[in-house]
Image 1 (cartoon, rainbow, N blue to C red):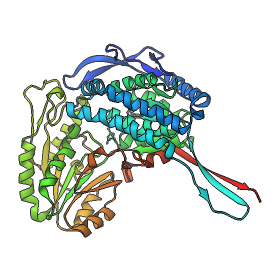
Image 2 (image 1 turned 135 degrees about the vertical axis):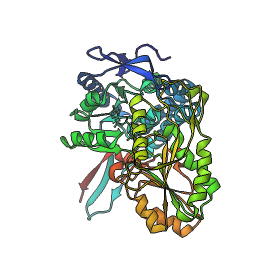
Image 3 (image 1 turned 120 degrees about the vertical axis):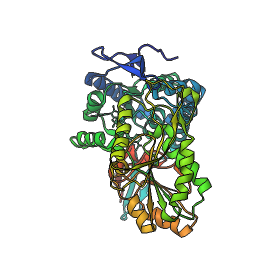
Image 4 (image 1 turned 90 degrees about the horizontal axis):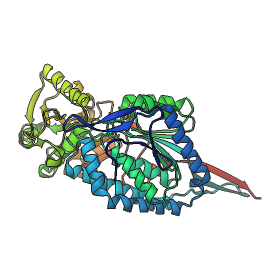
Length: 482
Ligand code: NAD
């Protein structure tokens, strides 16, 4: 059981304090009160974790067969499933998640480990027909020691997808979770040790991004970096990695559009449009934060959507409402800043949900807000709010819809709602994003579905089998045998 009172780094299967003994308070977003402490790691701690990972890789991990790695992951998956309620409760308090969301995150972690357990021994190279007298083959080799920088919005899910895939592909891991939410991961790695992962295979160093995150990104012993977070920090990570030509996967933000044509099945669309912006209080990289509606149905649709928004309630995570609080005070101020800017520009609030009476005034709550007729170039329609704020605007035809959809710096996900089969394909081809969903959105998370972006949403792919390719490097072996 996790020790509430002082959380330690997890290096080589042992818990240990930061090298200089400093800590960071853990704040409950539902009350604004501190209830625990994590280690404020140092560059020295990162170095120790990288050395432990290297030792594990050289002495044990690289010698395990793919099937053995898969079996370990499967045992971890089963162990996490046994502890799902405990983990969901930790995540709920740390992140302020409603019960159903915290449980869904634990279930996703189970599924990521299960998926990558099964995939570990299905990853292989090819033989290539070449000149007479030669045999040429390719090997998919692990990078070795991989670094993982994880944000606070879905710690378990994002840890599952990058660490699960990295281990399956034969790598060992040093993880820097967010200083705002890392408690579940410190418990998950204890479970890894219990099922037999060797010391050093998975290490966690907690602390601030500009300190330990930066140290991890610059460490010469890190041979691949998987980063999920903001575009600004993604640039810093890519710059640090470029200094030593280290490969990077960047999963950054989004400003994903829901594009609703006049022939759409609105009964199917409405709950998904709402869910895509309210889930996790809008703190989701793939949040559907813009709704583009064909002019002919704009007014009736907004009226209908407005009624649904008005019924939304946010409140204490254990009340299991539509959303809980935002992660921290600065995030709440950020969201309010966007709304104030929109108001100053004359943007109309079409509807707003409400914060439950039971919510603490010191919690970081934000009522879901629907904005209408948002100018396409306003910052609330261009930048990632990372809160429950949906910007509505209208379009005339397909060309106009495509121009609006592609008219931001981002390109992560898009939803297209239409019954017209030809239009479904045309839109899927013309929208610039890593994923397109037709008459659905998010496909329930889909651990099997490659995920990532274009433009400022990043590059490389996590999730699915595709992620395994990124966690390997390809070696070509040419043999001249005559
Ligand atoms: P963030 O970029 O501030 O932090 C992400 C991680 O990077 C944290 O662990 C943080 O400690 C670390 N970090 C911060 N500064 C660093 C530095 N100088 N060097 C190294 N590491 C550093 O983002 P956030 O506030 O934690 O998360 C919100 C952002 O993440 C949003 O933009 C969101 O869209 C994005 N996000 C993207 C995805 C995706 O898969 N595309 C998923 C979740 C979140």
